[in-house]
Length: 251
Length: 253
Image 1 (cartoon, rainbow over the protein chains, first blue to last red):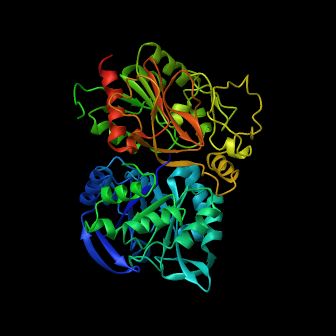
Image 2 (image 1 turned 90 degrees about the horizontal axis):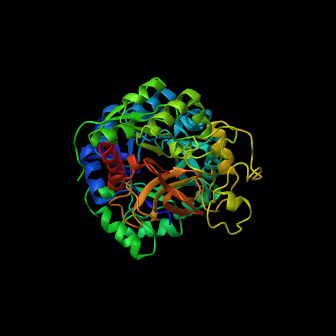
């Protein structure tokens, strides 16, 4: 049976891992390569490096950080944040990323999804969607969650899949950093609308939140940062908990 | 855990199907030298051949007759060969993903779309069976050769969500079917990382199978030629063990 994936996100700024609450107030959490090594030992299924400030500060994906992490782990590695065009994506992939995650640029230029899918295969293209509840719908936000758009998350996910996206990384801005649980309603709505895997993100605070997002939220994978970063819980303990609740995981 | 013995040279074929960085890194980690041969003649200098690849079966068209002849000659001389993902599918006769493209034909059978059982209305389809083109003239699926992204989009859009999703992405388990040098030290149910929409059939060459919608061959082995549908370079310790077994076989040659 296909396992539900547990993904650790390294929110990186200037070579260091940071973690914010509702995308603001970033604080330091450690060396990305050291964290990746620890997660690998603990049984993480996948790692995402997110350059959390790249879009704002117009910096490129951190090639050196990618290379350092890629040398530590033999697991799927994704890179996102500030990837604006095919050249940025190529730099990340050449440095050792298996997948690139595009957000603002994908919405502005959906043909970028197709270009990257043709060049690297759809499995290498993740479209990241930041969504926020807004008057009864899930509004898509861009530029690190700072700008509201008129797009709906479910509709945009469907369109992204049609353009050739291989996975959707869906973040709830409302829940990000709050530890109040994933937005299962949002996740289920998107997951039921597309036939590509959906990675739920934003709000992980307890092991039961993961159980909820894999059952009620119909997520294929779940991503978290701070719950793993500060060694609050071992990845192995989380997987054991999921296994005991009947969720298929790689032990 | 992994032996680092005499240097061996692995020819890693770069035919433009995806990036080779992670495969190269994993092989280097295990102590192998890696070269990407520029011409078919270069294969003769290598100790073993690895055909990696992601994307559409059509990409294998870049491996033209000169490459095919050189690969078959090297394999005939006893060079171990490993196909990974698309490279494994290419070991077979053909794939319905790009029916106009000929596979290498070292393994009998044709690769098929994983979601076919769902497309056909959910009828029982316990396993992808070996069907050569002659015995399967028309599966009812598209026969044109789409581009890489188009092929994927066609495949994905055939499925009414929320059916089981295709592509098959993530960690899934190996069901061991027979003794295998490539799988030495791998246990029943060990998990490896997959990302694909098409898969090879379960035939006599199948050393391990995996179930996702159907049973398909996740490991094939015939003499010193082997293939894996998953990505050993992305499958943690289990994947490194499998690559290490391939290098061990190459050293023992």
